[in-house]
Length: 175
Image (cartoon, rainbow, N blue to C red; front, side, top):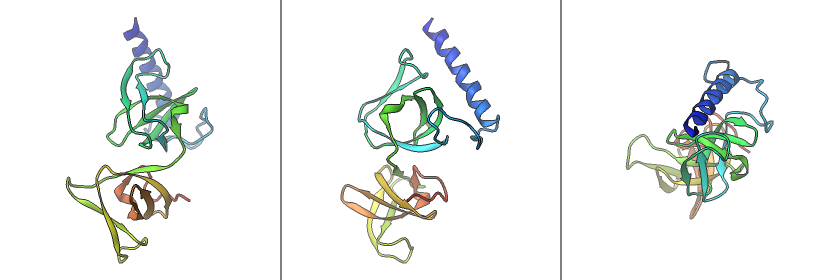
């Protein structure tokens, strides 16, 4: 019975998402969401224990548990008080809205393993490098110009190329 319920939820959510995106896979601009906020959008986890469920109810099975507060996730759909989220690795599931924060964070990403991202004093390639960050570092996003983002974290504060972050959209401006 539980499997049937999960299958029905999955079908309903797929149809709802298809309808919200006009079948294109991208959110329509005039979509009315439960929260009144745009979908998709980036948020972060408020707690260091967040259950990710198969569907948008507490009756649904827990797929996995996030254990890192501040982790950025992308809201891809809404259903009542539930948000379907995707993480930087592409995993998706449903999270209760109160476990999410509007505080913007990002994960440093690199093209090759072992490569380091330059954190600079100013938003310019000519600016001095103040630190080098590994892929997977999570930082708070303070500001983005569309090309550079000022980020802070434990022991660092500076500017990084926006393309090196998962948690902000390409060319997005954050104030």
